[in-house]
Structures are given as C-alpha cells and as structure tokens.
Length: 110
Image 1 (cartoon, rainbow, N blue to C red):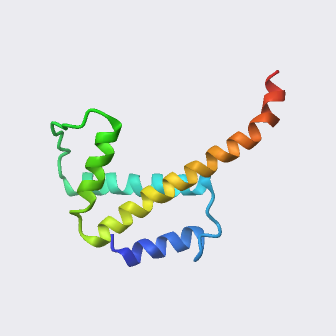
Image 2 (cartoon, rainbow, N blue to C red):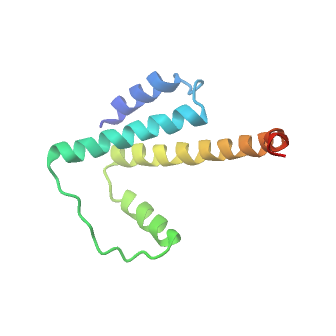
Image 3 (cartoon, helix red, strand yellow):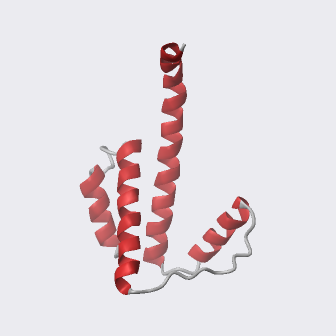
C-alpha cells in the first residue's frame, strides 16, 4: 500500500486530525489492516516462511523488528512504524481509562 492511500484510509476512518480515534476503533482499524495483509499474502500464493529465529526474549524480538524496519523502503517503514506507534499509544490510553474506571466496577463485584 502506498503512503498516500494509507493516509486517506486513516483520515476516512478517524478524521483529518484523528479527532474520531478511540482505543476501540483504533484496535478495529489495525485488526482490519492485519487481516487484509494476511489475505494479500494468501492471495499471492506466497508460503509462510518459518525461520530459525535467534531471538529468545521479547527484547530481542523488538530489537530485530526495529533493525529490519531500517532496511525497508521508506513508505513501508513509515506505515509500519505509524501503526505500531498508534497501537502502543492507544493501548496506554485504554489502560489509563481502565485504571480510572476500575473503582466504579469494583463495587459491583463486591
């Protein structure tokens, strides 16, 4: 996907300044993108490659991911990094909301 097409999809989904973005619809949007990427790989007929990954910890996986992003074409890297960043940012927001609302729901459980 070209960066211009990705930007159009983001703006159509969330508004020009992302004013309509919420943790829930960001998650849905990212799930849709992942499903489309999976379907594209399957449609292309490319088999999945299982490689002997030297990473044994989450930290090693993250380092490998960011090192490989540096070798990607710029447009592809920007899209990938943007999706990772928005996922992490909105997951943090969702966590904050959960902490703030938890006392309200605790009374229902008691």
